[in-house]
Length: 336
Image (cartoon, rainbow, N blue to C red; front, side, top):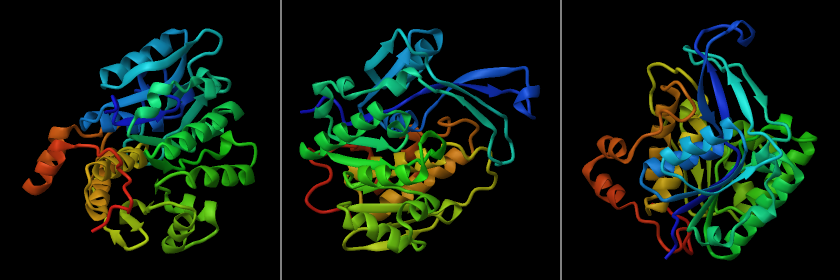
C-alpha cells in the first residue's frame, strides 16, 4: 500500500503581502505568507485528511526555510524538497485588496531554485503515490522543469495512477503563446481529469462553447473535463454525461486569488473518495466560494471538520472515510 494518497509538485514562493492599501511602491509594511497554486492544492488536500507528498526545491536561505516549515506545519511530507545552494527561493509582493478586485502582484522568481527542478528530482518512492496533481506552471519555469513534468506524468499514468491537471496558464513565463498552447495540451493529454477555466479552455482549444472545449480533451484521452465558469459554477462532461452545476452565492468577494486552487481541492478530494461527478463539482464550487471570501491564497481552504459541517449526513459518512482506491481513475469515469 502506498505511503501517499497524493503527490504534488511545483514552486512555493514566499509572499510579502501589503498591510496597507495602495500602490506597492507606497506601502512600507508587509507580512509574510506563502504562495503557489500547486502547493495551495496540496495544502487543501492535506487539510481534508489526505497524505500528501510535496516535490520541490527551495534556496539555502531564510525564505526557503520559511516555505518548508510552513508546508510541514500544514501536514505536507517535505522529505523530497531539495535545498539548492546556488539559486534563491522565489518570492513575490502582493497588494492589499478588500473589494474583490485583482491584486497587484510582482514576481521575483527568475532562475529560482524551483526552476531547476529536473528529471533527477524524481525519487522512485514518489511514484507509488496513488494520485498525481499537476499544473501548467512548473513546465513554464524552465526546459528542465518541463521535461520533469512530462516524465512524472507519463510514468504515473503508465503505472496506473490517476492524474489531474489544471492548466493554470502563466503566459508571461512562456517564450511564446503558441509554445504555451502546444505544451499545455500535450500535458493535458496525459491526465484523466482536466480542469481549465473557460478563458483558458477557449485559448487552448480554439472553441468557445464549454461542451466543445470538453470534447477536445475527451478526444485526447481525458475521462472527466470540468470547466470553471466563475460565479456561474462549472460545466462538467464525461463520455457518458454532462451538465452545469450552479455556483455558490457569495455576499462579498474579498480576494479572488486561489479560487481555482480551492475548486481543484474540492473536485480531486471528492473524486478520490469515489463520489459522483455532480457531488464532486458541488464540493469544488463550495470550496472555491470559500476561497474568494478569505484574504490570502489558501487561508479559506477548509478542514475536514468544516467540510463535514457543510454537507448532509450521507455525505459526511462518505467523506469521513476519505479512502483513496488502489486505482482511483478506474476503468470508467466517475459519474452519476
